[in-house]
Image (cartoon, rainbow, N blue to C red):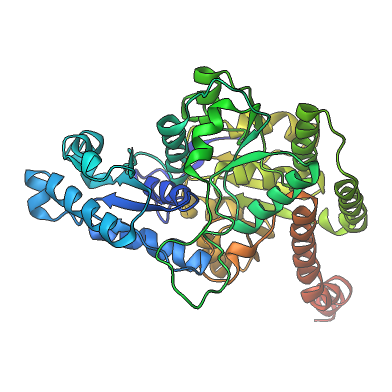
Length: 463
């Protein structure tokens, strides 16, 4: 097991395994009801983010820009920001505007919070909230930008009413809209009242409507975020989130809402952990339907283990997703050879160490990495499976190893928004996809391998 010293020795990333902070923050605001995003920076930044989100979710994605040019860069971009916000209000009529910064804005020292407060916009547009989030692209990955936006929203809105409720806060991590719908289904089976933050289940996977809406329906309501300070407890789907980045920890520290960390419910153990936690908090048994689904994935694990043991996987993506996928692989006999993420300071080695050692697995674990490094490690490990997002497709083409797509972004296949990974149902689908890929590998090379094994040596001797 080793860390970033195994990366390339040049001081740069070649095809980095991450995206920038405002990307992650934008995804959060897309899960808030009647909200819009304005990025304070050059037009290219918002175009890059629009393109990535639109091709993954196959939905029209509007992200505004303050369009900083040379003049704004030299003399300050306050006028651009104010004019841009006025345009957003007039065109979209949102309730919330997320104002995100970029590399350029942070480098020239733009304080968007102060600029908005001193602009008079808050008095002029009473009823519209401006939520500033510092997201310099060079500061960290989209994973950190996501966490920063969730915490900023909670810090901006959550206030105690003096009356505690039985509601459950659920802070969502790197999941698809279909995953969020599955999470809601599981909680509904428990008959638990919950607040989900953010909720992209409708906003980024909307049904067809002949009439175009500038802001799609759905998302977490503003009043519900306010009420999170009064909830019974918070479950944060993130095992690797540092306390200073955690919205759940913020609620616990400021409003005494008990905070529980839980992995994204991928695999048997990950799903068990979430459901047992919900059952314990509300003193309820796990619903019969979910137990039946658990039995089906157990049966599938027994059926497929003899093929899965031939899997040697390279797993990459955001830290929480990598953690969940690694656990699913381990519990099904698929050996992780390389575990990689482009984010840094994630404690991946620490949280995985005991389980990997228990199964005598010794993968390379690497953070803050790029695909050049992952490619070299993949060849050294002689892996036969790539599991991660679409940016790994170049490794697939170069090395001839199949890529099982999971996470964000998925540009080269359709249906990224409909992929289901979580819960017993989603984990079973995902496991079947992995097993079938291994079966294809085995069958596609079967005749060639048999010939080499039984006739190759004789042919060589004959010559």
